[in-house]
Length: 310
Ligand code: MEV
Image (cartoon, rainbow, N blue to C red; front, side, top):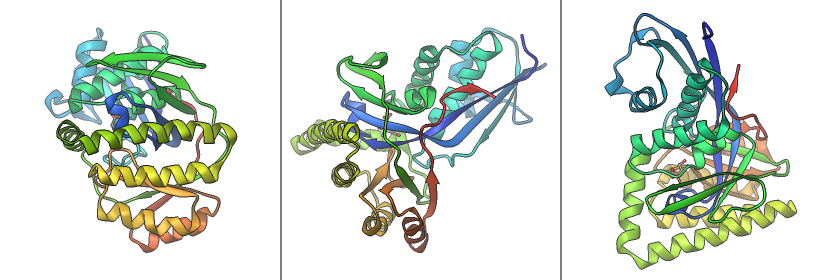
């Protein structure tokens, strides 16, 4: 067993399909150059960032230690470049980096095992989830989730009568700007809100159906490198997410501010705060517009590595 091991995993943006993916529909996500780092060393008792670990306060870590760790106590150190609740996948990246570092302590990181374990951690912590955030954080680059297995298939997960086939997705170079509202978007309650709406409203179910079509059209647009079309689809996806009740004034303000300089813009992640993304070839103007409306802009790079030993 190694003395101290350090593993990192990236955050993500969802280009198309958040929320509908929880109902087993397609989604497209990209890993970004903001990472979550976890380092582990054997210790006399469990520590988290220098303080005695209280497992009840850290559901992801408690779940992982219970199910995926057979060794002795650990000194756990976590460091994140991703604000929590920002819609940029901080909790998925934590799960991936943590379970990846447990695997690295006792051997090698095996991608599909990390992706599966991290999905189970998210599911247990939130009560519902799709594997989109944890899969893209594990694999890096880009992924597309579809109902059926296709070309470049990575892994398939099933849960509660839903099936997600995860594939590697090559994407053209594109410039994305993230606008963070500074508001913590609570994923669990937002998932419950959408589920309740879906269960009682035919209109909500139709909206989820439309989101599926938009994501598949987006896959084609990406394949052709048609960023104008992709941008229009992203903006339409934002309107549908608003119909489902997961946008908010702050997100709408940032989306509207970015639009004059963008191919398209939408909230990314669970919503209710968190972040939006804009697809643009005028990133400086988008950043300034986001700043003027009180958001924090980040120009993000995609095409980054997934889980890895540092
Ligand atoms: C959160 O980043 C994406 C959601 O679709 C939830 C999930 O897929 O687990 C809202």
